[in-house]
Length: 149
Image 1 (tube, rainbow, N blue to C red):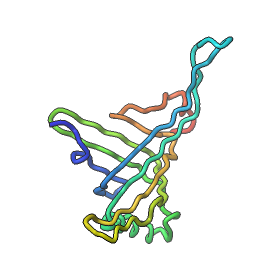
Image 2: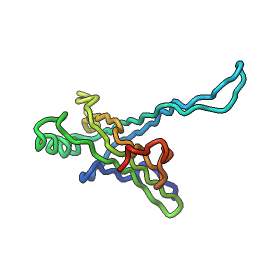
Image 3: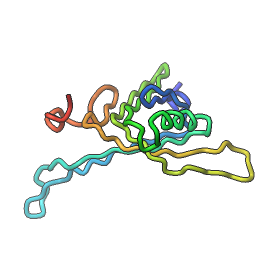
């Protein structure tokens, strides 16, 4: 059996959630260096990562209770996100550090019914630990020197 979305588990901090969809995208602005219009190596660019979690109302309310404990949605601390899946043939572990939540689509209601109401919560990765893929950091140690403790 191959790895699919059904095999993936997701946690935000201490909360284990079941998400309908989860995305995580990395933007790496490294570029080709050119001399006289000819490629001549490369230069490092800035990086950022962000994603989105789509959950049903039941799962949304778990996060909502946490927001209530902190006094506001914007009062929620940044969480570390873990996305993990394993089958007999494949395994994937992606960690995103310092995920700062922000609601993107509070309601998605279809009056015809037939599907559960969903809520989309965006997040930005804010920690210099950034993203690790199968235990390997995306960023080199020299890029985070003095930032990661």
